[in-house]
Amino acid sequence: MSTLVTGIGELTTNDEARGGTTGRMRDAAVVLEGDAIAWVGAASDAPAADERVDVGGRAVLPGWVDSHTHLVFAGDRTAEFEARMAGEPYAAGGIATTVAATRAASDDALAANLDRLADELLRGGTTAFETKTGYGLTVDDELRSARIAGTRADAVTYLGAHLVPEGADADAYVDLVVGDMLEAVVPHVDAIDVFCERGAFDEAQSRRVLEAGRARGLALRVHGNQLGPGPGVRLAVELGAASVDHVAFLDDDEVRMLADTWQGGTGTVATVLPACDLSTRMPLAPARRLVDAGAVVAIATNCNPGTSYTTSMAFCVATAVLQMGLTVEEAVRAATLGGAVALGLDGAKPAGGGPDASGAGRARLPVGRIRPGARADLQVLDAPSITHLAYRPGVPLTSAVWRAGARVV
Ligand SMILES: N=CN[C@@H](CCC(=O)O)C(=O)O
Ligand SMILES: [Zn+2]
Image (cartoon, rainbow, N blue to C red; front, top):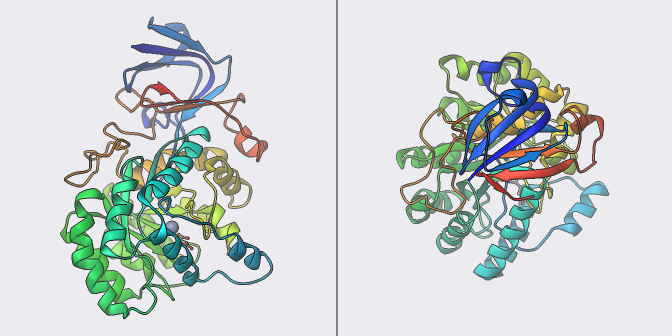
């Protein structure tokens, strides 16, 4: 089955061969064949296909790639949010509230909540997403979180090192995280993550976690420099992490260090989380300085019930433009290809996945670009250009979405 999507007023391809930040084309068409993109070019040259969809001059771009979420959880944290808006600071300890609710929930309840949020992501134009464990913090609860995550997510990250459980000794808990817990989850995950922050895990503990994950072949991620300056970014760079996320507190050396990782072609993506910065009333990550220095930046929602309860990549893109100083093109690239690079799903290396990473959502074709051979993931905006994402903030512009060749919105 093939589909010709034509009448595209503005096509954002992210294809470097087409030049510019976003490889933009005018009056374009795309042919989807099965789950892949088969052809991209001028509408006037488009080949015939089984089905034809005319989008009437609207803008088309790759589906969002949300490279940082925490969607396996139960309960919510409305009261904590209200207290924060009344002046209380965010503290890592709030995670324990969600851990208790998650442990008490059935598998079905956790899966239903994940489905609800994954559907919400899709309706907002997100066609690929990562999600993490980290609200279980026992061997059994982390294992079931990883299994459930794999039913929907394109990439699953093990975050046993999210918080030291109440009453546990920190170093003894790290022994468990790098020992039995890692052994249990490793067949189901692609990456390992650690919350390297005051109130969570220190540098030595974070290093142990990341080195253990690396020894098991997992990609590395770090929650770093979220609540203040700290060792997270330096550790991520030293250990060759795929991404370091939050990065709200960066000095000039850290910005340069992140940019320098890309000199050999692969490096550590700096993932900014604008909705989280706003919802925790923390400073916005210095996305402008990162892009100016040459770092590869991703924009993600960090959807979770504590610090960032939104699935809206469009909101994050608008914030990155209006408040972090990115251009619309830079923000759109960061929210699509940037996320794909962070997840290793951009096609630069074989698709990720642990030995048994066979979840329904797993990406087997590259995402983040509209070009032949990529997964057929694209979104149509009810607008003539991507500029409207920031020009009309808060307006739900997503009008059609294809994921892996299937029309889902
Ligand atoms: N910072 C650590 N983890 C999450 C917050 C989780 C929570 O508060 O429940 C984050 O990325 O913001
Ligand atoms: Zn997070």
